[in-house]
Amino acid sequence: MVELVLEIREMCKSFGALKATDGVSLDLRPSEIHALIGPNGAGKSTLMHQISGSIRQDSGTIRFLGEDITALGMPERVRLGLGRSFQISSLVPEFSVLRNVMLAIQARQGSSFRFFRPVLNDKSLTEPAMSALERVGLAKRANFLAAELSHGERRQLEIAIVLALGSKAFLFDEPMAGMGPEGSKALTAFLDGLRNEAPILLVEHDMDAVFALADRISVLVYGRIIASGKVADIRNDAEVRRAYLGEPV
Amino acid sequence: MMPRETLVNTVLALLLLAIPLVAVAIDEPFYVTLSTRIAILALAAVGLNIALGLGGLVSFGHAAFFGIGGYTAAILATHAFNAEPLFFGLEGTTSMPWIWLVAMVICGLMALFIGLISLRTSGVYFIMITLAFAQMIYYFAISWPAYGGEDGLSLSVRNTFPLLSTAKPLPFFVVCYTMLLAAMVLFSLIRGSRFGAALQTARQNETRLAAVGIVPLNIKLAAFVISAIVTGLAGALFADLNRFASPSMLSWHMSGELIVLVILGGKGRLFGPLAGAMLYVMFEYTLGGITERWQFFLGLILLGVVLFIRGGLLGLLAGKARYG
Ligand SMILES: Nc1ncnc2c1ncn2[C@@H]1O[C@H](COP(=O)(O)OP(=O)(O)OP(=O)(O)O)[C@@H](O)[C@H]1O
Ligand SMILES: [Mg+2]
Image 1 (cartoon, each protein chain N blue to C red):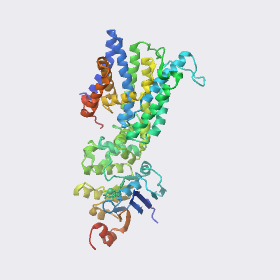
Image 2 (spheres, rainbow over the protein chains, first blue to last red):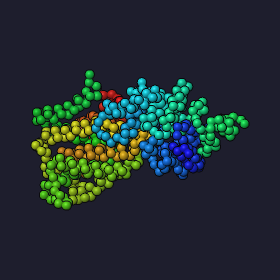
Image 3 (cartoon, rainbow over the protein chains, first blue to last red):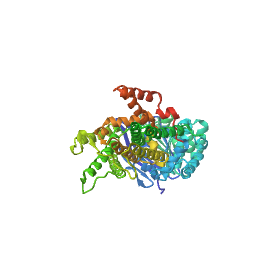
Image 4 (cartoon, rainbow over the protein chains, first blue to last red):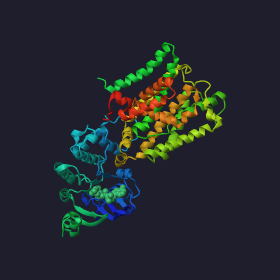
């Protein structure tokens, strides 16, 4: 049996009367890309928030690398190796691109209670941060402010930050959004290689990317998983076509 | 070429040093006292600037630490003067370094307690909780007759510092000025450090901080404690300046005044508090001589600063801050 990286069991979350997550169970296996698709408002981001720990589920459990992390907050989960990117980029706007990544490096080193040594010429921070930027092709923008980046570049920076954290599983919420065809293509190729580093749970609307990358696809509609399986099966599933791909049957 | 901010900072630092030296030369000791007042208020505001400027923590209760610092100085000195032990046979003291140490430890512990409760909230709730704690301490002080109650507590003589005759205005100014510079060095180191990076992230985007695995509360709590310690030190010096610990040091007006100093000067800026304190004391002195309602005009100026020059005085003189 394969050891599961992530095991999500019977997650539920309501906002008032709205069941945003309704009994979702989901796995992430080593070196796979598991795509989570579904129409707008299906509850994909809400589920990703619960997995990363930024919102608390009403019920359900999460295991990560065999450990029950249900009770942990987001910082603890990140330190265990669960890295995430945000659907709406979440960066430090007044910091340079490089400093945004350096923050991840210092967090990974567990060294935020150092009060005196300046970070700006600290090679143990700048060098690994720079190599993370190089990997996502953002090195030439290192000294710009995060606020000055284009929408697509912000997405790249988010990925660089997660790489810098050395995560053991990646949660990406619509990383292609706002990237343009060129950028999407490049990122698709990049994620394809990244799965060997750590498995990816990918929320994405770009179907070309999803079909190119995913090992498995789960379809979320109104907070429930209506289908889950191999790419070909999902493509041909009648219910999925009706509910999501918008085709008459 | 020197960056413009460095130039502005150097001018401000030298100006504050020059005024008392000239004043002594032309035998106008009043201006020495005025400069000392500026240095102490600036020191208190440097403390607040760590929480407010770097961490975005709008504490409306820093008077608590300023006042506790002041009362610590006065209480220790009174006990030493009357040769009455404090408790458990502990003696009072009139030695400034000891007084500062005690004041800073008490303020740090107090801030740890207040911070643990208040930092779980944010925005207007944080403002209100810090205010509430400071007011509680204020009412406690005015209802405690042993240490002066509403009348405050005076010091018979200024406390001492090894090798200096602090009773004279100029040596005491030098002590305060040195402490101000030391606090600004600390501020600058913190701002550039790993802790500073985390703290400034907490201000700009707390979710980002949590998403790299740093617990925002821990960072903010440490900043709040350091901030309180610096402001507490200023309070101890302020009591020595006036030879009086007044309950007004603990009142919400004082908290507001410290926020005004930081914002007037430019929040998060190294020399913002000094610029703010200089302007504030200058207004207090000049406008205060003309009209009792000088604070009305100060209010207008503050409104102008907030509306038109967002970066405060330092923003006006030295341009926008860049963080690298
Ligand atoms: N904090 C909240 N309070 C109330 N309702 C919320 C909250 N967050 C999300 N919702 C609602 O929950 C539902 C699921 O939202 P969610 O953002 O998870 O959808 P999504 O699948 O990510 O959509 P998209 O594809 O547009 O990103 C939506 O109806 C949304 O309006
Ligand atoms: Mg979403």
